[in-house]
Image 1 (cartoon, rainbow, N blue to C red):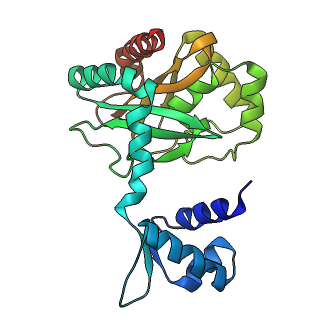
Image 2 (cartoon, rainbow, N blue to C red; image 1 turned 90 degrees about the vertical axis):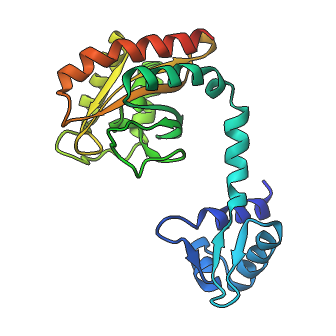
Image 3 (cartoon, rainbow, N blue to C red; image 1 turned 60 degrees about the vertical axis):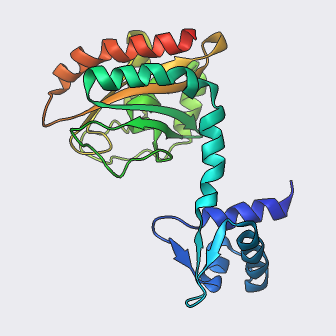
Length: 246
């Protein structure tokens, strides 16, 4: 473990929507290092082009170069490349929001997103993370894991009720995962966002191991949960199956 690399990434990860810019003192406090060490790391990251220091305020912020790693990931990810034609086809034929997500720990991460003209959540972009347990893609991925492995992941999750519709009690969640395994897809109706209906199917790799999930999301104002599931579940199952075969 190269601790200096770890600390450099901790400095970069300290910047987010709640802390878009920070003074040297704030960086040190956010990362948990003394001011002298924070000065060395911010200076190095500034020289490498990943941080910018305002000449007037002396505050630091991320630069566009921090997108480089994400760009290289998106350009080199085999699953995304194979899924793209199906994502585009679903987007064109349904005119609804289409997402491709992967699991990272106990969260799902959006790696591709085609927005509908019927705008849902504009704050969800590529790179957005959500708890896996209350999202259709997360449950779909969990449903393709061995039951013991899925249960172990659930035990690591911070289960809570984001809305009155959230399936968050352990027993109920495990039952939902098992049901999703049987029918081949998962649903989440207003479990994380109010007004959001989603259906997802897992994309599997060699040996049936889940590597991601494809989902369609629509507005509760335009569909009932029953209508949404009947219309779009077969489409995501077919698309996810096609990507899995590739």
